[in-house]
Every structure is written in structure tokens, then in C-alpha cells.
Length: 528
Image 1 (tube, helix red, strand yellow):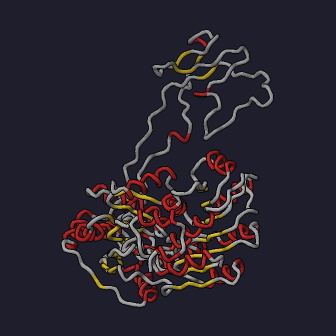
Image 2 (cartoon, rainbow, N blue to C red):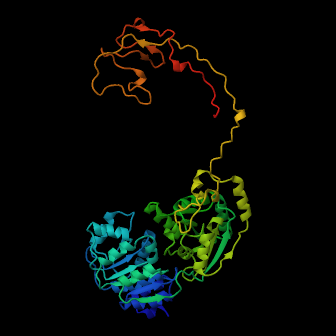
Image 3 (cartoon, rainbow, N blue to C red):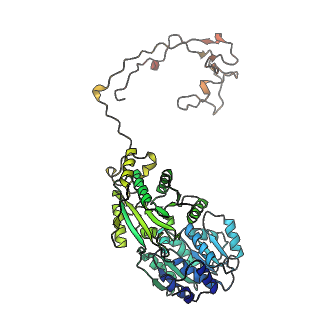
């Protein structure tokens, strides 16, 4: 079958051929006719099989007739991440180049004002993340009663990210006569329930078993001898040196790991940059654009880049550790081996990752070939000689529990690497402790005191306030009843007579009187 047999508009066929495609994938061959026929569709297919084109192409075909009104979009595409929404927008612009259709991208990290201008001008299609869409609706800048077609993309990811309540609310704001398309690589029970709730007699298109990797990807596993982060990074570097051929993505489970791994790779001469949800949107998009334009060799990412990103030149995917959710493994390695190309994936499994890796093996239903890169022992030995990194690796001391994404479920202390624990203080033997000889305090030198204390009435609230044993007035000074001050010290530390006082005749010494606390003996504590 060719695209010419799918009854698409000639302008769309020209754009598809210009992109270098002539034969539709199975999800496209079955999904496009169903969408053009007005049916609700539930599509399940592996990552990298062209699900985006399966709904973008027929949507453009149907939107070619009619025109959008201000603040009333005609179609809506919901995406779980900003990066995926931006990528779908690019696909819409590429395949819809022959049409005069308006598109509005509603994602976070972008000015509300610019987005509102596009909505006011009339948008044929909205491509949005649920949060920003609801923000615009709450501000009264959006009416969704004119939506004719709804697409929920990466529905299982929406479930993982907690967007299902938002999607349910959004669906209640749309016309009941709309056409609803739902696409996903996996189909957990919650998504099945969502499909039954908001779709009307949908066509279920399942071109592959859910949560299975594409056959174009060769998978490998490398067992790391230690849980120490420095050792794992050494293993990662040795794999990249041995196998990276074009561009690669390194996936980490935590955002803190993303930053550290990217910085470590860059310090060892690799062309690497991080991307995760805590970075500013402008930085995320700039990094992704550099990677797409082949200006960046390695992208170190969290699972924000695991879904839907279509960068055909990615030749290898490296998992710094197995993901906490075994379904995410399929999505991660699906960033390579796309559009008929071949790719490779490498997963580092340390002793603490065995439970997560067992879940991955159970999910994909087959064993993975082990791989030990040449030079790994040398990299590991060099890392051991340098010793563990200081405080920056403190989070690595936590042992991940089953299903724990943030590493909060920590194992017993003896199960965690101790490289960053403070060394125990050496025991002090009792017989080695000796008392210091007593030191006798000599008599204090002559002290200075005011000849006449201030006895005038004080203003309420202006009394002395002790703070840590010190007087409120600096240096223990206080005003006398005539407005002057008693003796203080000048900037050289020499004591001066008070202002308005007569000089030395106003002062007298303390004689032999010394406070008792100054006469106590000093000695070394036995437990020091």
C-alpha cells in the first residue's frame, strides 16, 4: 500500500513525498481511513511507528474545509510534555504547508500574551499540554464548544503524570458529538476505562503487542560491579567510547542525575548537554534544537524526552540505570531504530538495580545480550583510584526501593555505599587522658567605673535588654541623666572619660576586688 491509496488531499500527499515517505506504516494504513471516515479510534503501536502522522494527516485533510472563529478552536491535540507538543506542531506545519490553517501551541514557559493573540485570531488546531490549556480556559480566553476533533496522544504517559483528572474535565467541556482519537504505546486498564468513557464505539487498532520494543533495536545490558556513582559513570563513558556512532541519548532516572552525568561527560571531553523538567523552557528548546540540527552529540535526559521525540539520527540509547517503570524502558529505547532505521540500546545494571532490571526482562519477555566494552576495566580502575566524589554524590547513597521514582525508600544503612559518610572519630583511651596543670589567674588590672550611677527615671520601654549577656547599648555604655555617656573606648581600644565628665578625678579603681568567677582554675576536660 502507498499513501496515494489513502484518499488524502493531493496537497498532503505532496508534502508527505517531500518528506521522503511513500509507504505508510501499519498504524497509518489502518488509522488514516478510520479517521477520515469519522470513527473514534484507539490506536496502540510501538514507539517510532508513525502514530503522529496517523492523526495529523487526516486532521489536516478534514480541517481544509471551513474556518476557525476567534477563541473557538476546531480541533484539539493534548500532549503530556512541552517537547512532544512542540514536535507535533512542527509536524502539523510541515504537512499542512499547502493550507492556510492557523495553529496555536499552548505550553508552559511561553508568554500568555503571545498565545492569547493566536487564540483571538482564530485557531484551527490547538496543540496543548493539559495544564496550560486549563489556565487559558480559566482566564476566559478560550471556548471549546466548537471542537470537532480531540486527540489524546501518549495516553499512558498522561496517566503516569497525573493528567487523567484534567483530561476528564476537559472532555466534559467539549461537544459530545466530537470525534475522539486516543493513541498510546501501552494500554493499562485505566486508559481502557478512559476510552470507554469518552469514545463512542471506537475502532481499536493494535498493530503490535503493547509494551514491546521494535525489532529494529538491538538491546544490550552491561553489569556494573558497584553502586558507586563514580564507577557507574566510568562504565557509561567506556560504553559511549566503544559504541556511539552518530548521536545518542543518555536516560537517567532523576533530574539531579541528569545534571551530574552531563557535567561529568562534558568534563571528560564528550559533547553533552542536559534536558529535564526543571530547566527553563527556552533552554530546553534550545538544547533540543541543537540536538536535532546535529550540533550536539549526546543528550542527557530525564523521561521528559522518552516519549514521542522523533530524531531519526539517534543511533544509540544509553540507560544510566533501568527505569522505575518497566514500560518506560520500551519508550526510552524507542528513541532509536525509528522510521525503518536500525539502532542499539545499552542499559547499565548495578547490584542495586537487579529488581528493576528483572521487571524490565519480564515486560519485554526475552533475555538481553550482555555487553562488556573494551577498556571498561581500565576506566573502572581509574575511577576507583580517584576515590568517590565528594558531597555531589550524596543522593547516590540512597538505595532505590521497588517502584520508588525519587529514591526515597532507602534500604538499611549497611546496604548503602558509605563513601560519603563522615569518618568515625578515633576512640580516646581513658588512660591516655591527662589533666592539664592548673593555671592561676593573676589579679585583674584596675577597672574603671562611673563615679555616680545614673539614677534618673527611665522612659517606659527604654530599659536595658539583654541579648546573649550583652547590653543593648554597645560596649555597655548608657546615657546618664545629664545626657552624657560614661567612659568608653576610642578606636585604638584606649578607655576614654565619659562625655560631660570631669576626667580622671571622676573615676576610681576597684582595688583588690576581683569577681569570683575569674579566679577559678582552668584545666583540660577529660573527655575532650
